Length: 168
Ligand SMILES: [Ca+2]
Image (tube, rainbow, N blue to C red):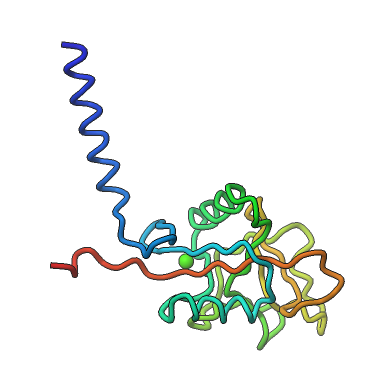
């Protein structure tokens, strides 16, 4: 009886897992909470990261973190990937110093997890673009490459996961 119950448990647990993790992202993209994410182990400037996302998938955008759960997911992905130390996200204060908005819609980026001492918002410091490190902390950086940096963050692209309910 005990072993029969165990088999039933394993079968139902496997079915539940499959239901929660549908394979609905493009190949090589990672699914999390209705979005698909593409990670690249290359260091580029912020503007180049945006270009890479449009090349990979014209409907994708740079990573935009809206919740703590998404922030934790991104930090875990950075830690799991040898070639990635920090990632860019589509958040900037290019238009107004200290007013951090998402690239895709200009809405205020509310789920901010600034690293201690950041952002450095004194006028004209030019650090108008945001990256996330392996601890999930946000940091404002110069958007374009500067030789003072030992390395540059990696691009992460985000795509709305296809809605299963619209298929068939
Ligand atoms: Ca997002």
